Length: 75
Image 1 (cartoon, helix red, strand yellow):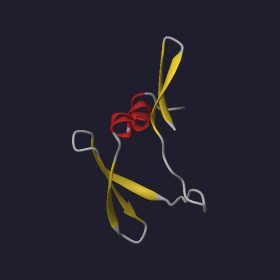
Image 2 (cartoon, rainbow, N blue to C red):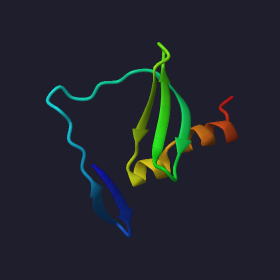
Image 3 (cartoon, rainbow, N blue to C red):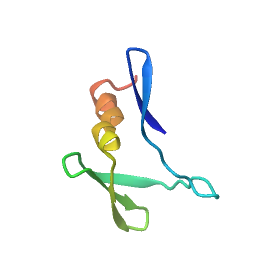
Image 4 (cartoon, rainbow, N blue to C red):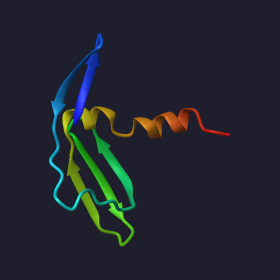
């Protein structure tokens, strides 16, 4: 579930359905983020390219941790 919190009040915005087998993960390289189009492009280890559509909140937050890491690298 994705939510916002303002003034101590939490409001649910999105609910994601997870299948009976749960979540699966894979390693990819992010090749492009387009917040305006709400898409995220990735490339897998075997060279396969995939583009995913993002929710509004995911598009807003996509890549922020990468930008933060570049601006303030850990020593």
